Length: 383
Image (cartoon, rainbow, N blue to C red; front, side):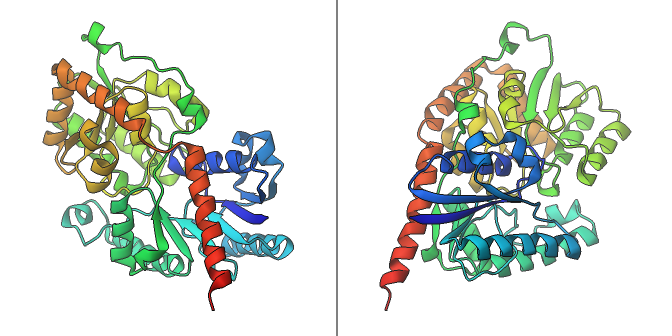
């Protein structure tokens, strides 16, 4: 029987694909009698796990973002559990693992690396932020290269990863994102904006407050086009420095009547905030890992997205694309969705058709399990 250690220690209190992916994998794997599962989980994830998955948790610890003492504490916990349970594989939904073990690992690539030094991105970063980003990328590449297998959500994501890291493409796979049961089983409520166009057009952006998520364009757009009848709804955890800084910028620019923050939203409550919006806005300038595109299509909302390879590969002809560096471009395409009923309806129709072509969480889990088994089988017969 395959023994798998599922590392969910990186799933912190941030609305996003990482939390949903860890929850989905843990809850599905916990019901799989064909494997011997053990879970190391971030404490913040515990209340959201199913009872079956909680029964598989052997340790709770948070993978630290910084701090030597915290890192050593986390590493010791993981080492002890590997020594105690001797897993055949370590499955890491959101890599890199920041550790090297003799046990083989299958890690998800989810880092927003930029392929080249982009002057536009550099313009919104301080020297310290650029240095930190460069150093972080070098460290992450080192640890990713120690993994036996890597997967990403799209082909462009795999190509992007291999180009920058030099990792062999033969050891990579594409496993598309999925809609967890909490989303796919939730009721779909149509937008009411067409029947009441006097109210503001509501745009939802589900993302953590990282620099590459490009929240800045929202502020620039609203300051440049103050008469545009729109509102933005964001999901920024205010217990993070990035969240506090962004909220401070919103207040400083007197945009609290235009930008509303839900703070952290549990995956089980996401359907409610989609029901309250008219469109999904995705201005991220470096994306390889996100559930929001699929969620927007599932809930029958146009997805107005940055014109980048990842977005186009996921959304296809359902997306409404704009230049993520241009507030004018964003305003133009938002206005088009507001004024052109046919464009709005066609984007919703195409999105509804497209989202049905993606794997289910069970399909994705099965493919991940098969990848681990195949690797172990090949290693066993290798001379």
